[in-house]
Amino acid sequence: MIESLFPNVDWGKMWEATLETLYMTAMSTFFTFVIGIVLGIVLFLTAPRQLWANKIVNWLTGAFVNIFRSIPFIILIILLIPFTKFLIGTIRGPNAALPALIIGAAPFYARMVLIALKEIDKGVIEAARSMGATTWTIIRKVLLPESKPALISGITVTAIALVGYTAMAGIIGAGGLGTLAFLDGFQRSREDVTLMATILILVIVFAIQFIGDFITVRSDKR
Amino acid sequence: MIELKQVTKTYDTGKGALTAVDGVDLSIATGEIFGIIGYSGAGKSTLIRLLNGLEKPTTGTVQINDQVITAIKGAELRKARQKVSMIFQHFNLLWSRTVKENIAFPLEIAGVPKNKRDARVMELVELVGLAGRENAYPSQLSGGQKQRVGIARALANDPEVLLCDEATSALDPETTDAILDLLVDINKRLGLTIVLITHEMHVIRKICHRVAVMEGGKVVELGDVLSVFQAPKAEITKRFVAQVTETEDSNETIKHLRELYPTGDLVKLLFVGDQTEQPILTKLIRTNPVEVNIVQGNISHTQRGAYGTLILQLKGTREEIANAIAFLNNENIQTEVMAND
Image (cartoon, rainbow over all chains, first blue to last red; front, side):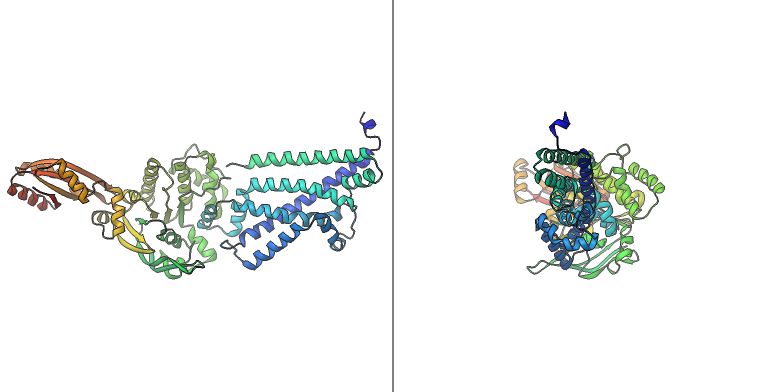
């Protein structure tokens, strides 16, 4: 039945491409999460009247975030080709897509982290200081736990954007469902391959959204 | 134990310097409940934050016991803060933690091992009357309960000083009284020094031993709560005292009373401390042939004793009335003739 609807689909290749997309999404989401949180915290704490108030660091971090958030992803991939080649040794395959994915998404997520941290009641931070907490303790035990729901819903949105980015990276040979849809589907006019790749991408997106929403709701005790 | 010397704090606001605290000298004794009252902007929030180093004074020194708070920083200051804890108007609890975990937070900061932490937390839950609610999240608690968590959290590391930043201003009157009772109880049981700031004279009257009145960054009046209530000097203090004394002796009121009691003399009596507990009126009537009619009266209780006013209508001959007043003065009661025939 399914075979007759999708006559041109090579299921082995499709499965392999799905795994590649999942791999790229998972790896880039993980590094985006870590780098985004670090950048977000630096942006938050170096702002005026904050614990690490520092105009220069704040300005530099802000500029970095704003510039890389503004470059269209497809252009960012091309711009980063020499950097990718230096770092990974090749510009083809799922690993070669990672630097561009992370550098494209981390600044985007850093902004969301900043917004989440700004939502925290200043009084709670003051209370922690009044108890003799170090800044490191405040980050670990106040800033991150108190903004957890927003951090999780933010990374959910970012992970979904990253699924889209992996497909775009696929056009220039990163592998995954994007490459499959473009090379096997579009260029060889096999619409059923493109359609199947689309369905699988949608399944991945809905799964991410479902898991993200579930954790967000469970972590919100307000 | 707490010593402030010529403390001044100015802020750079861009539009010029703003002096929040202006040359304040204060000395607060161990075990005292010391109140600082002022309207918003009087500098009291800044002043209380100078005591735990959350704010640094521009000039002057703050000393708590042997430690000069204004001279230390880093790890030493953080260590000192464990002994000078604070509660807040909006409680400032971590909503992501349960009651138990919130109370454990300062213990985690102090590096208390897990097994000792749990025992101490349960002790504190008991002390502030939250037994049975220890696994609730702050969002499931009422305002009064949240402040109880705040108090338990502040007591976790056995502090020597408790700073209260408008701790009851967000609570309804009944809850306010319950929280104030808890503070007095803690003060007595643990011998803790309490410094509180408020804009409600009611709070000062109910629990403080001494009070400082602040206006424009300066302490404009300082003294025993009872004597400040009895004889406020500064204009602003009189306004605060009027918040809690119902008997107003404005000309309007006297005129009104005169209309209601057109004959005899209207005399205001002022009782302080022990006098409020003595049967002065009985004695007065037994020894003097005047007719006595109680017009108005009230008694307020402070931590340092009660004080009250009573307005009497005295009827009799000139001489009888004069004798009655002399008798009262003999009993050490201040009198004031508000109106006579």
